[in-house]
Image 1: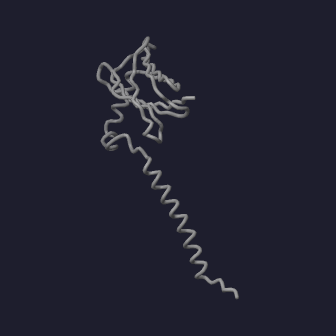
Image 2 (image 1 turned 180 degrees about the horizontal axis):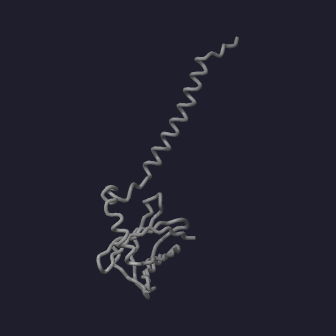
Image 3 (image 1 turned 180 degrees about the vertical axis):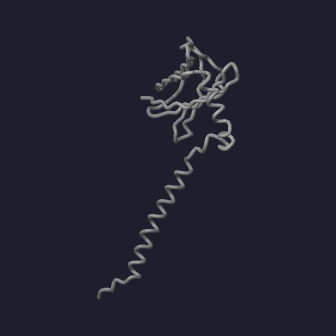
Length: 150
């Protein structure tokens, strides 16, 4: 004896299938949001009000930042418009991955021959250096540099 396949049977199958798809998507969305590190400013509106002035002050310094990363060494060289090495005060520096703050580290820089060096423990892959420096005149210089350690 066979049972007749009705619309109610089809509705039940579709509810189970779409329910599974929705549950999986909600789980993935929750996990993705949980790993998002958040914005880097407390209030983006307040920051936007001084953005142009801050950018102009940074550009007026004429600094060029060159950095390299190996598994054990982070090197940051800063030069001015004339190509002279600049050693500013390091306000903060964070070396980390873009999506995983658990691997963030704060490098301690030592200056050797006008270049800042820091010992790090960086695995292979892409890294971000977020550095905040202060010039002698008090101008704050912020940069985010993407680096690759092979």
